[in-house]
Image (cartoon, rainbow, N blue to C red; front, side, top):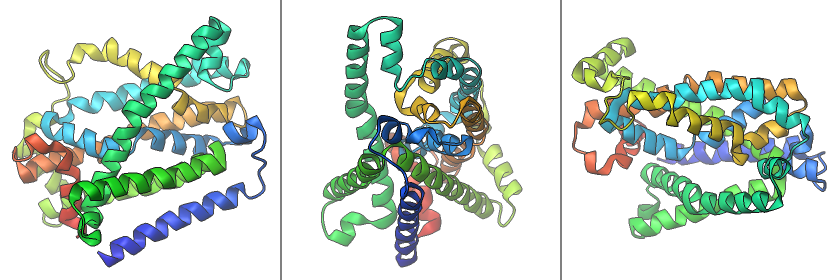
Length: 327
């Protein structure tokens, strides 16, 4: 446990120092400097930030929990994301940058009127605060509580431990965003994204190594033969994701999220130029194809270990896997 805490704090401190180092000479007192990172972001940084803005604890917890119950059907979310990102790079981003946009509501004013811009901006802020932010904070708290036993360490109840963790995550995240602007968020996202992906692969690797008794390929084979139905990617009509919806509602949702969602597309608005913005979206699309290794396959492995014993508490699948190998 001590080594886990030290490594966590060391990585967090490194991310903070790296972000400060990259911003030490930047001017954050202008609109472009604060909200668009001085229009200095490269494709690699854009991809790292977009990926971590999308993949966070709500995916590690929620998507693995869903994969535990529904199997590989939900991989459609990642595949269609890659398609939407290609469309965004080829069509949406060139149009947005040509108009010199700073925000998506600004585009709505250009396309419609100020009332539409104001209403949509209000709805987006409310939806972010009421829906997405609580989920991210809660799932992050579940993960940290599971790994570090916050409630036991502070000698408080688990519910109080979750609240303490939620507040800590919110405060630290706010410091990055408020004092550093988009560039600080983008650089910290990129480094955290590397850590998240590497950590996710470690969990997967240890699990398959253990199941296969030293052979990860054999481990994957055992998982498959234990529950082959979990590897089916064609959703039935009564499944959580019917196959037909991939080409209709799901694709529309992905086009909105990756091409019109302010929290995502703002990273591309901060690009050095159109080419870097397009590279950022395309790099993100490539990375999304590998994301199922950390947000879907571990959930299916969880079914191999725990069977249906956690069906009523699927949010605990990924924390239980972590505890199995890192405590």
